[in-house]
Image (cartoon, rainbow, N blue to C red; front, side):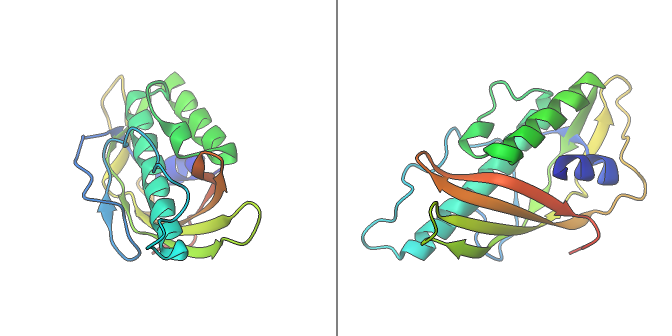
Length: 190
C-alpha cells in the first residue's frame, strides 16, 4: 500500500504549513504543496482552441497535485473530514489515503511539513473508454515527517529514503479526472 510505504518505510511527518500553491506542477517543474484547492478543475474537456492532449495533461497534473495537497491536509489534521480528497481521488487511492489517515490518527501520529513534487504525465490514452493516464512523480519527502502528537517527537525512521518514485493511475469520469491508484517504488530513488 503506497501510503504505508511512505510512512513506515520513510516515516515522513505532518503539520501542514499553509503555503500558497505556486501553480500546477507542469512536466519538469517542482512544486511544494500546501492546502488543497476547494474543487477539481471544472471542465474535463478541452476548449476548442487548446490541444486535447495538452488540456488533459494540465487537468491531470492539477488533479494529482490537488490529491497530494488534500492528503497533506488530512495527514496534518488526522481526519479526512472537511478535506476535499474525493474531488481528486477515487477507488483504491481514496481508500488507501482515508484508511492510512485513520490508522495514524488512532496512534496519535501526524505528518508535519510538506513534500515536494515533480509530477509528469508519462502515459495518456484519450481513446480508451474511459480515458486513462499515468502520472510519475519524484516525491521528495525530506521536509515531510511523522510526528508523535503526544510527545511532539519526530518518529521518522532514520534509514528513511527522502526521494522516491510514485506512479499513479488517473481515469476520466463524469466528474472529471480522478487519481484511482497510486503506488510508491521505494527501491527506485530519484
